[in-house]
Image (cartoon, rainbow, N blue to C red; front, side, top):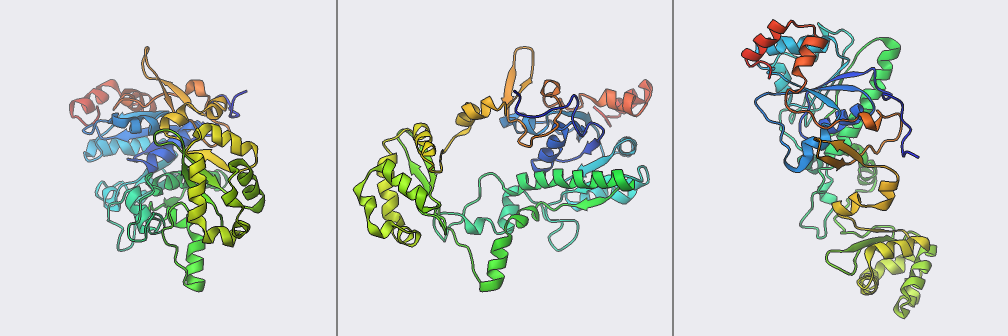
Length: 395
């Protein structure tokens, strides 16, 4: 049985999106919409090749058509306006001045499509003292205060390693587009949405703002330890760079863990409650790692989970690709890159009426769909299309 409930062409099959986004947050959001059947037309600059280094673009631009179009040329801007006139949504994540300089702001686009839904995703929003600052997920998470709370020593905060603001903003984009598309279906009216990259991670930190305003509490880096659970962390296992994460959240789990470890030192009466374990966390962790270091991480995860102890092997990318649970759930997607080459990619974590997996396609080459978009969607003549090619407005 398939892991997701699908319909023949996806729940969003009637939505056409003009995608101007770059890097990660925007492309992730538009790819998710494409996975659910939205027709996403990616507008690329013909002077900038779509890099396949590391496969980042490949994984973020599947299921999208591609037109290579010079927006900085008057003729290219005219093509773009024609494209907007037959679209439903425009999404971009440039700095605010870019769309102004190109004269394709929301107000201008409304002249050709009065019901247009548009979302801008600048780093710090369209207004304010930081609005023209460039931003990436790694800097946005720092501005949000996330990095000040993670790390192993107080004087050296750490980045998350996954540019946390990017995936959160990408998923927020999906939510906001669906909400406003539904509103438009009821009212017939479009909307403009300012979705700042740096704002998205702030929405995940509410309890820390409340605690600080109420009692002047500040969260400091605490490694893998937890303020309310102990033991809690990642413990070395047998082999090179093999680890297991264990999180004990109640007395039942602690008692079960002690039985599995079977070490008399853990019978210390002082370890019987949370406060005692927190006070002796270092000693407990050392005893646990003596035990885990002799165990295979995957086998130990199975052993502990069967006893009701929350535990998980710390997987690398190859472990995840080969994970039997994810593969049985058909999480991964297989995209045919060429006749001889089929590649395995992450699937779609959101269940629902996705586009049929058999109809998913890999990232298009730069300008691969320029011809069909200009001549079929916009109704341009062949002579006009060839003229645009000759002027290098389109490629």
